[in-house]
Length: 372
Image (cartoon, rainbow, N blue to C red):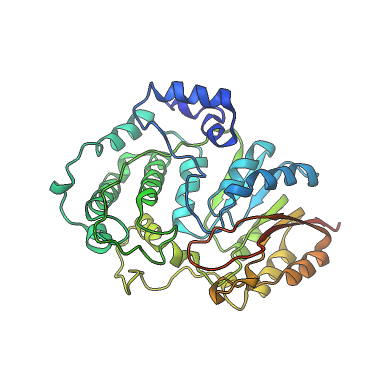
């Protein structure tokens, strides 16, 4: 039977601040052993995350957009915008081209049979395991003492290997919950500044890994999940609202989160360089000189009543890799051809995992009422 812990929007209430529901969650948590503090969808460090802006984005959609019914989050990233707007729409499309993000969406949003006891038993199997007795594996041999402590890397690798070996014994929903839980649990203790382009140089990494579950979102909405190129997917659907939040600089997300991508696909590729990355794959054109043409093509082919584009002004960054590939003026000009466009802005401290100086940083929302 599905856990009562997921009913309604109780898991999401921890984030939204509903005190009554938070107290209810704590009461329910005492009755279950799956984990005391399950991961909510926003519990990630992620470049470009809208976690600190979500109230503003959500209020803007409610106040400025007349359309209801269908929304498409075509560069969904963490999935936070999808999670926060889902209650206001009948259906939603969630898309991202990262393998790890697709699994996470399916773990949180996907409908299907899953059994709380089964998920709990698998997770609890590793709560008291002696890591010294775990044999070396792909994860410990490559990432031990670097992105994770040696023992943490061993148990992460063992869990992933066991999950793959037992894959057929789980429903699709159960497998995605467990793999998402491993991704979140691993990311929680990763020896990084928030992405995997590099790891911190430390002589003695402490063992900190705890295998905790995510908190799936229970809902009755129509949700379609994709892992596709946004410019290809845009031809396949119509929507009332299209939310667009593409990457704007040269930092490739498939490279930034290569460890989580590797953990998700589990194809065990050969790794190269100090950062232990596989051969380049799954690269976005939005991080290259073709970014403007890609954006223009996307908007021109969008079949939506209203379009919302999220944008930040890192084009003033001192780091060349952080400078925007699409300018503020280019975005505005493309959207104005599509329909009447207004822009809103909010001061926002950009998530900066390095030493780049983002002074006078703002987040922008462009809202376009599509002609005809």
